[in-house]
Length: 220
Image 1 (tube, rainbow, N blue to C red):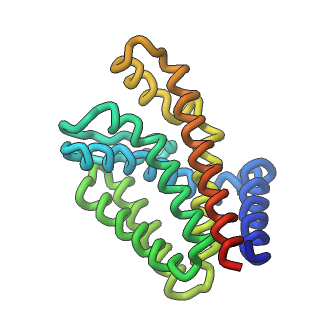
Image 2 (image 1 turned 90 degrees about the vertical axis):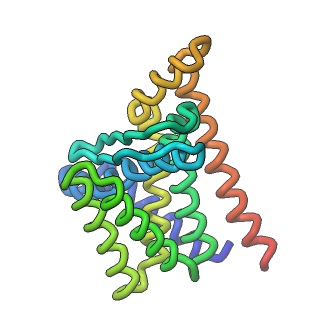
């Protein structure tokens, strides 16, 4: 992999760790919108799970405390529930991959993310906070693309932060989804599914990193 990409990964990781564990109150304030983005990706994963299995999305809600809920009608409940945790990990890995390996597409990826956030904010509107956050974040992404050259690094940071947050919060974030999932597959308790989902996310991230490094090596 090119030195700039490696340096970028290390830099983004260092920034996140510094803000998360040593940033104190200011670090928490800076990461607050990132945490809400992770919540959006989680809820968007539920929404996508509903749509691809023939269901409909009634609403999508993000709360100020970082929690969220998505109302769906129809579809395969097992896919919808898993879509939150696994789906958000997939989205995070896609963002990170594009930023790390396909930097020329980073601006398009940020535009697409802003578009999805805008659509969700209007079509699946539930609260003013949800719509306000999604629109504000989407506009911020558009301004970054228009007026800076940070699109690649922002995309890498968003993807990396999302993945780390998902892994770090695995035993808290999807708790309600896990309980509901365990009711579908009554033989397997929720804590087993918790580790199954975590392993899936770790494997997915591992192969994503392997793909990034291998594909770069093959192009040298």
